View 1 (cartoon, rainbow, N blue to C red):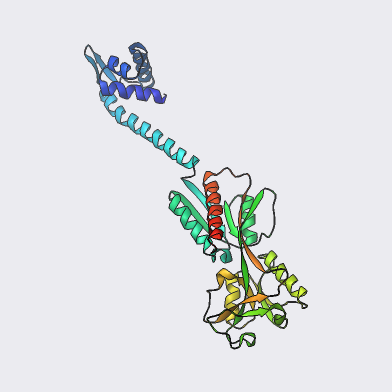
View 2 (view 1 turned 180 degrees about the vertical axis):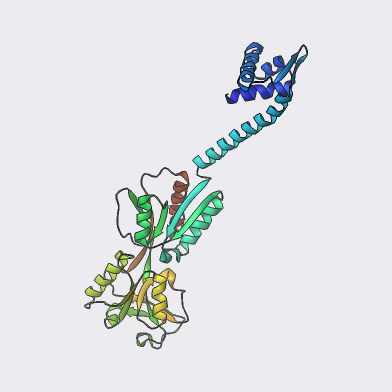
Length: 310
């Protein structure tokens, strides 16, 4: 049974006449009658009762009209959905992100803009560290990831820098280095002044680039960085600084966390400069239209963000 047989059948059922149906189908009446006969033979019952004035549906034919219409509607719907999926308007997209990257306003802005533009794409949002997300991209369990510095560069995985932002030092309220600091102006501290401080850092495997840059900058400033403890997430850094367990550095976009308990400071004389990138990660060989749309939107959004100087 072919779809054209169903269309032929429905046209005859609508016209109740083979010749008129053939004219509307732009074909001759004998071939149309032949195709309907083949359909009836396949079904095992007559669809029409032929008479001199035309053709009337049999009981079986009347039921088959509804089924044929449903089949054709289903095919049309499937084709429409497939076309939308081919253009990236439907489907599922697994997006991973690190907590520190998600703290930057660019990231929720990108995700919201994508939801607005492609509301029928289901977003599977996942938080993990950079190492886990990169592995997920490599294995195909994550479509797109947004993280800070890449922890590894597997073959076939693409990395695109969306932007870079300044790293800030965090000290607990009341720390001697910021005595007399006021809330209306962010303090500026020389990196050398931190030589005796105990640092709370994200574990090296979670943020190797920023971790190693800080260590190198401290060595360039003439001291070896002292590590009090290592944690899995940058948000934990801030909480532990608030508890008085040490000092830390975080991207500037995180400066609104625990403002009642910590003070954020700019860092002077750091070589190399301490910056936090936001990196977009995906597979190079992906053929997902939904993924391509997300990558294009994210890059455009970041470009506008930088142009606006936000």
